[in-house]
Image (cartoon, rainbow, N blue to C red; front, side, top):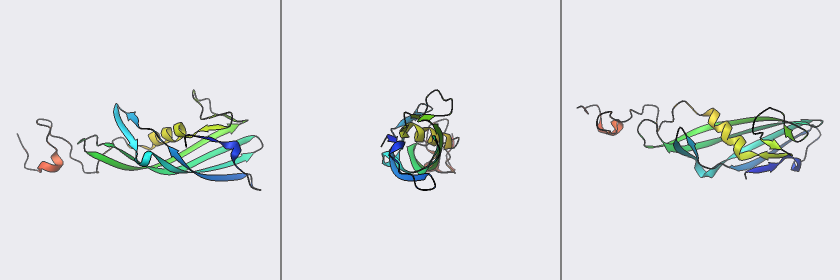
Length: 151
């Protein structure tokens, strides 16, 4: 699912609703390097609370980001928590963003989740914490060649 109509929610007595959604996330470039979310997306728990014509949308989930390690170029799989918040009034995003996530009560789930995922990423995406990277002289994988590697 890439878009969700928030008017489709049934609110209880406390003016709160929640829905579990699978959000599709297309592969994207980060620093010119291609990354993808394992399984093509993630399960998101969407919680919505409203007061009058105003709503607060909160999303929570976890994605596994896959792509090359930024040190050794081997495959990395990094679990990343995703937390999103959006404020809506009269069916439109309240924040003065250039590209709002909600327009006409339609939530752009993919953009909302992708941007929250990008904000949660560490400074470097690594295959493992102790990745030693590549030799600056010959390009050998220092994780494989061992401590004896020298030039």
